[in-house]
Length: 471
Ligand SMILES: Cc1ncc(COP(=O)(O)O)c(C=O)c1O
Image (cartoon, rainbow, N blue to C red; front, side, top):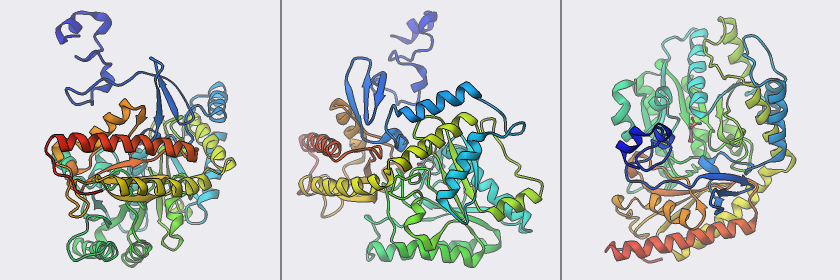
């Protein structure tokens, strides 16, 4: 429908020029319309035309339980019937208390307090403000800088974006915010000349210490990082020694270590927290979202030590809240999600199926000239796309390779979650992050379709004269 026609027709005023609902206004001009969702169950989703899709990415790595989980839906309805909303300033809620008890029983000593918000960006904003209030309560008001990594992603709101490492986002929104210092992420595939993944990770940790010293340690409040990388690094896994070194550096300078586990937490990597993989490098604060409510309700969590929360409380309480913080409906959903995950031992399934998925993706790498690396942990996996494995040359950026794969996948009934970090400055990758309920047969189906998409892309690239290396 044309813009002028839509402007005249009151029934379709809310449509864009493609005839799509305006809530998809983030779509770049010229992009195709999406299918309309009808229903979803397990790892499958159906559109209103009856076409079936495999959710190979859990949406934006959120739907950890898959779709249509009866226990979660029943818990949601039950809580909705009791009370959809009760503001925490007026009421405590059983759902809130039960969820806090369950989550902190899984996170253990050092992370005994939980604060609930509506999502990942809010959780990181909250974590940073909690850290700040703690420093002030401790008598260290000059601590206000939060060091982040480059590249990284911590959320879309301006505070979370200020600690995010993405030069493209900085260029756009930088003038509106106070950009925080960044140190290199310990990228493992594209390491600078003369480095191995291990030596570069060591160097990346040393860079943190140098930056703390350069900033003035007494002014540095926290270091925020994803313990297992999400979309911004393509499931980066750093050596354990990196985590130990970072913990040690933070300890030495009185800097709080914040783990952003929005994508990697809640069981996705095979343990409840990604931090559990390196127990001797425990963070001071952890943020969770996405998988903690598995897409059934908006929920984010900030986990913090008892002493931190007590000191902030003594100083007058946490000066921070949202209308939907500690929302009973979201907490009831979160509780059912975590119970379901524990009852079905989905963390063990994430470990088992993660091993299967890695093996299948390595098989793809052996056959496709376009797969240069396979990495990740549990069911947080990624493949790095290249034009040439020997030189690690990227597929020309203007080919928009990850987005093209997502289109080819959609045509073949497979959903992919794609977003480029820093306009591709650090590489191009695809996340492979199915729900934690995935079976081996379903992984085979996902990887087989992905293999078709890679072949189709390789053929398109060759036809366009792009030189590709050997498989
Ligand atoms: C690591 C990480 N942090 C923070 C966020 C922001 O979470 P949300 O989109 O729920 O605000 C995301 C979302 O993708 C994420 O992956």
